[in-house]
Length: 97
Image (cartoon, rainbow, N blue to C red; front, side, top):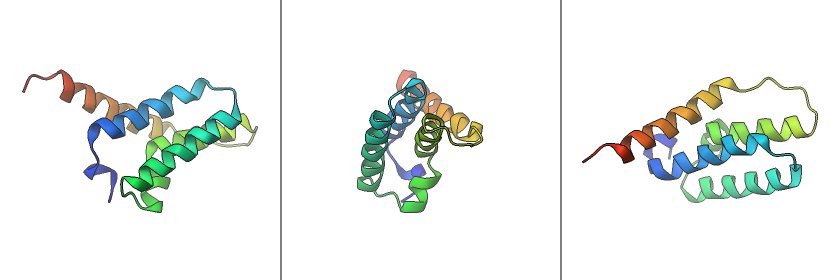
């Protein structure tokens, strides 16, 4: 399964969590949350490669790299994709049916 077949509410929640964790300072907490996210994605039917490409997973990995002092490039594309998912969800939930 790919991310396009997911429930938009679920995917928006993942993206919201991934963006909010960017202010975290506890690598253990981020790692535990990242592991829980990956398990949720797996349970939702995403493949390993789909999880690795999902913007929420990329943002969690980038935050862990940041907390561990590793050299990396900020995944702006993942941030933009995550924000787009959240905006789609907000538009869907605020538009009268």
